[in-house]
Length: 236
Image 1 (cartoon, rainbow, N blue to C red):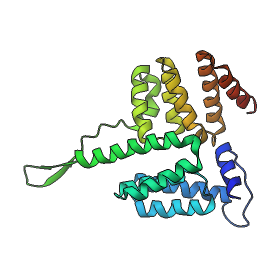
Image 2: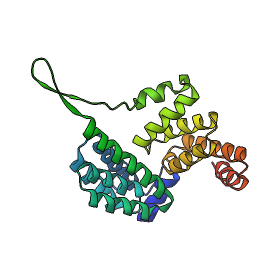
Image 3: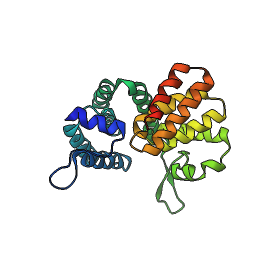
Image 4: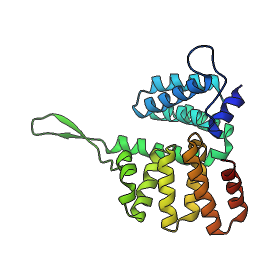
């Protein structure tokens, strides 16, 4: 059952065995996972961990669940526990291990920077105010205005945002397209391959990923890889 749930998640299937009441197992897993990620982002770590732990009981071979559990522990200063969860994420999904480790390091730097750059300042009235020097671009604004942003700046800004939101499949696609426009073909391919499992839950987005990967590998002369993604595209 666990392997079957994982297969459905990664292939983007939209149907699963229907439960007698309420949600299907697939729908429940997705809801708990998305809630767990949301509550990590909003710093509700105990709530996030409870939701993600329920996900593990349903399917313990989904690396991104362990990854966000690792981030929960990291944000709470529990570095050893965070490392154990990260190791589990890499073990159950070795194809994504590099992405998990790279994004974990980026998040660790972000959390460290956030702690160090929030300084206490005193207003004229004597009240303390928090000042943050973070300059991370706004993701929603970036996604809405991407077409108007020059390719070079889109590539640079997109990469910064991908470090913060490593599982945003649309953000990855926009950034990878900018990479092809600016000559970063191999880097764009790596972005797409790291994000393709998350894009697979949306058939339209998945097709766009495959189309761009075929184009990239045709351009770089890597015929075997181009053929691989072309075959996947033909099955859509």
